[in-house]
Image 1 (tube, rainbow, N blue to C red):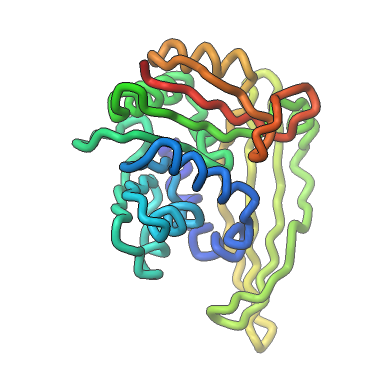
Image 2 (image 1 turned 135 degrees about the vertical axis):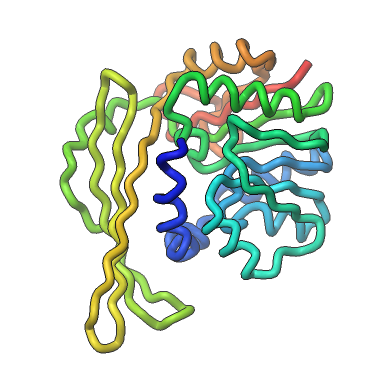
Length: 252
């Protein structure tokens, strides 16, 4: 995970352009926040795609990220009252508050590639939750497709940055390794100015792909009781064709 810090700082400049339009999971997290109440801990807050609407809805949120670049981009927006920001890696998280809900959305837990970091992160969150507090981990469903990635460079999108008017192209190359369940992903952001000049920024990081029973085992070792596994943000049951693996666990 420490190796990912520089990569996340690099993509922070373009992160909103990449994901800010995504709203598929917002209603889910707002509903879970209503059920659990404040305070809420978000692991991997990024530039605030979910934390900002949660705080605007009146919830008290602590947003954690290991990327100073991501947090700087969030602060530049002028976060609403009730949103506190903390720069720290998940597996070394030490806070004084105790939370009713903690969540790690949009594949964020995949950045923990080492088993000791994965367990340490879950144990840290377990300590920070109140008795009865809920943890949500939102991951892609297990799939062997990533194993076929061989480093081919593919164009993901081309968009206009509203902040500069520049065109930005995102290209992605990935290599999968079934022996480690890991995927080495490289993003290329090519920024094209009005005169046709191009600046390329490159970010490489490692993602760990989790199996269902691997996650159940990790959660149990960290002291959690697994309550549900959903296959979508519409709370569909998890099954073989599910796109997501959304685990809902509770601190007894």
